[in-house]
Image 1 (tube, helix red, strand yellow):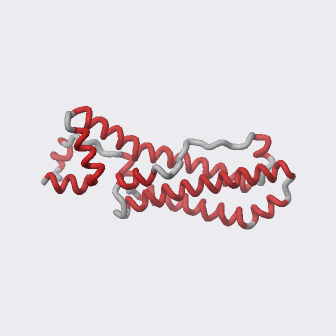
Image 2: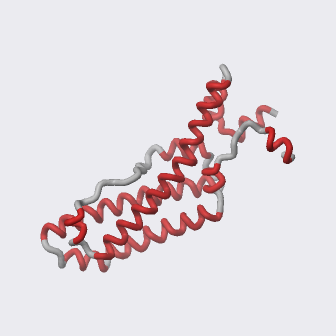
Length: 183
């Protein structure tokens, strides 16, 4: 594509898709997977020992928060692996969007109250804080990748009476097949 035809294109460049395929995504992926590994090692080892030393109410809070942490990290890992599959060409963005519906990403999940959290071991609180920050970053990137895509699709269908049908064909056959079929 020449530079002139690039600027004439009516399709905006998706910042989210550029970011998802960049070196920054690889850094985010490594950070997320490292956090999963570190937290698992902690919960299976040192964390288990620390939990045994807690009073009953704090031990219950430990159990609740460690389950929330584990769930949050599994959702993060699933999302990261899904995006990596797109980057490596194993899935299209549309296929990933369909699979992504199984992943529960939220801006923030509930936490125990501050008094209870204060009684938890410091390492667990650090893992909770790190995972929540990473989750917020991923939720933001997810919005850039998928919500902007949905808005672009709505924009295309509102500009043209056949836009809806075109978007349905793209969803069914993927953008690569549609562009080669149009030639």
